[in-house]
Amino acid sequence: MTDITTDTQKQRFGFVAILGAPNAGKSTLVNRLIGAKVSIVSPKVQTTRSRIRGIFIEDDVQLVLVDTPGIFKASRRFDRAMVASAWTESDETDIRLLVVDAQKGIDKNTDTIIKSLQKNNQKAVLVINKIDLIAKDKLLPLIASLSQRGIFTETFLISAQTGEKTDELKQYLKEMAPLSPWMFPDDQLSDLPNRLFAAEITREKMFLLLQQELPYTVAVTTTNWEEKENGIRIEQTIFVERAGIKPIVVGKGGTMIRKIGESARKELTKLFEQPVHLFLTVRVKENWADDPARFAEWGLDYNV
Image (cartoon, rainbow, N blue to C red; front, side, top):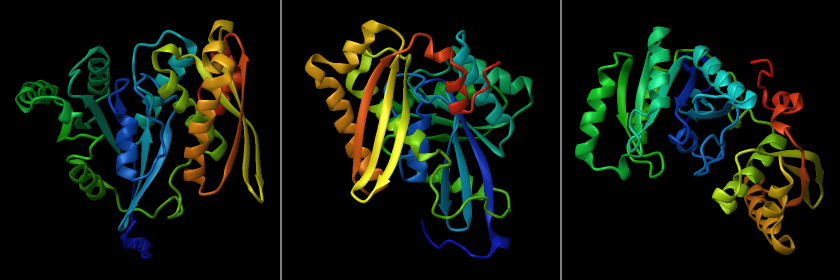
């Protein structure tokens, strides 16, 4: 954060929706642009479950970067609600970024997003991500194919993971932000409540530690939050849909749940800049993803 202006007449403010197929690198890009962790990241697709607004501030510009759930063909109610949330954010934004995985190219999900933008006469900025993982000569046909779609105003080739070329994208977004007073305090990084963010960190650690062993259908809820003299006491419940999943999460003799808790506790202590005392419980709750309370917690529309 540098040289923040106090003259509101010079301030710029805008919403940036970051669209893309699952695992295109949207959350990594949001964290990279903001310079802090506001969205969880894992190799598992569909990690982001609702819009997460990260707040970028530099010079006289404040941008709200909306990390949306990956857009895909959804069948389950919860998935349909996530996709609907992504499109809602796209409709209500000043700038749209479409993040495309350079390795996967124009897959079915990316093609669906492009066609939807074309149908609604909506423009977007093309961001081809993960260029560090592909030979440069293979990028040219992808760029040419995407450019023919007629909806992209600018194209950026980046690696959100390494930071390559992300400064150019950041500068462009700053220049495109409309003249407008800021909407958020200059020390706020996200609009995600701490209780929800803490639950997301634990969910991220589960994905990273269990990887393919862990089904997508798990949830973490912060059930208690107490700020004490010796730090924050956080109690969380991990919900799994089937009894057979619980032993995987708990591990032999409780070894896995301790690893999850320790990893989450260390990161939460760093993020909240004070000691965190984390207590985890695992419960079996069939069809938790159809529970209206979960939709309300995430700001998703249950009736989609």
